[in-house]
Amino acid sequence: MTNDGDTMPLAHYLAQGGKLTSPENVPPRYRGELLRLMSSFVDSELAGSAGFADAINWAPGIKERIAASRITLEKADHAGRVLDLMEGFGTDKARYEQAHDWAARGPRDQQIGLRRQGGDMRLSVFHYPLTGWADAVVMNVLMGMATLHALDELARCSYQPLAEVLRDILPRERRHMELGVEGLEWIGASDEARASVAYWLPRVAETFGPTRSDRFERLKALGLRHSDNETLRQNWQAETGALLTRLKLN
Image 1 (cartoon, helix red, strand yellow):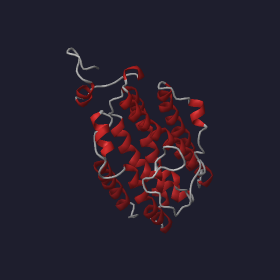
Image 2 (tube, one colour):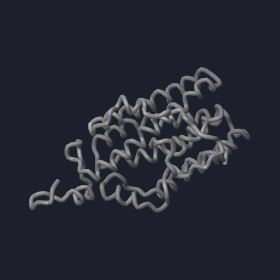
Image 3 (cartoon, helix red, strand yellow):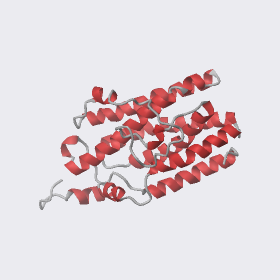
């Protein structure tokens, strides 16, 4: 899209729901914001997969081991699918995959907030360590619900190849969350589960970003975002609140 008399300006085109379909027709500012979104998703999925791998050996039974293995495998696969799109923008996929220690975690009691850590783009919640099966299940449920809200948002973005990949990924991420809920129902309203809920709730809430965000306005203008951070966070809080009330965990 250009600004000549026969073609709609790009900003207007995107504001009206227009889609871009390939790296060749993506302008520099849009490219930078798009790659940042994709990097955050890829890094979070790789870190989530690596961090959850330990849960396979914490699982109390074969069914739970299979569920943990499936989540670990599919999150890595999701990262690979979006990394394939990033290759079209010049990203070296093989080098990228080895660029960071995706299993690295900091102290349990650290307070990261919204700060990026360690040189990659993973969400801050993936710098906190898991401590056991119940803790992993709680984190998987709370973060899984947040992921569904975030992906539903990005699956409507103006870069059509990314939107299509995320729409394919969404059902599997929903199943990951559902497997977590099944595990949480089995664990029940234990003191350990309640302590994990209290630990993870504020840390997952931070993944939606600041209430007021100039970056959100930029992304909205480019058609890469639609609902603001606080709307997504409140929707997630209502959903998790209802689940935790049902399970007597809040």
